[in-house]
Structures are given as structure tokens and as C-alpha cells.
Length: 142
Image: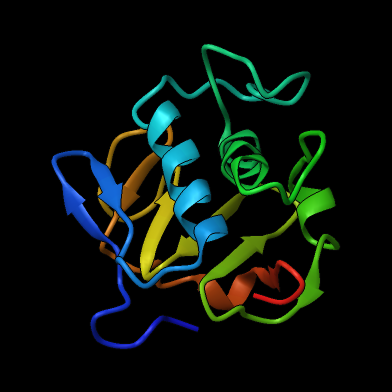
């Protein structure tokens, strides 16, 4: 689900800024995602290690989740389909299928493709129209 009014992250340039009332782990996830924002997209990027110069969709989602302490090693999109708890979270929801993964974090989309154009990890305010073709998961307690 999407946080309520006043609880949504905002975009400043290409980076997300967490709302002041967001839990610390959500702020940490956003900070981590900002660290790799706009890095190049390469299939398999970020799978072997969180430290990479390129990321694919699941590598980028894994990196962000690791920033919040939710993952100890990167997961591919299949792993993200079964990670965490089923359904949408209140602050973080990961969407995954066999070929792609992306996340809604404090109301912003963290993705390597889809609406908004370009490739590589980046933030967007535009929701994907195909969200129903993904499995929704969230961190426990989120």
C-alpha cells in the first residue's frame, strides 16, 4: 500500500527524500537506493555482491533492501517472489516475477524500467500499469 498524505517520499533532482515521519529502516532503504541511483543497467548486475558498478532490477531492489538490513545477500527476481511476507507493506512493497523486480518505497517507484523511460535503477512517481502481473511481498513488520 502507499503511505498516506505527508508520508510520501519526494524527489529532489534524481534522489528520493524520505518523509520525516518514516521509520529509520525506510530512510536507510531510500538512502541506499540513492547511492546507486542512475548506475548503468546490466543483466545480472549486483547479483554476485552488493558492491557493483552496474545493476539489474533485482540487484537494485536487493541493494536497497540491504541498506535497511532486510537482506544479507542479493536475491534474483525469483528469490524476491518468495522473500519476506505476502502482500503489500505499509512503507515498502517489492513486486517480482520470473523476469523482473521493482519496489514501491514510501510512495515512490524504485525500478530499472517501465514508465518514465531509460534504464538503470532510478526513482519514479509513475506507477506501473502491469503491477498485477507481479507477486507483491514486503518486509516483516512493514
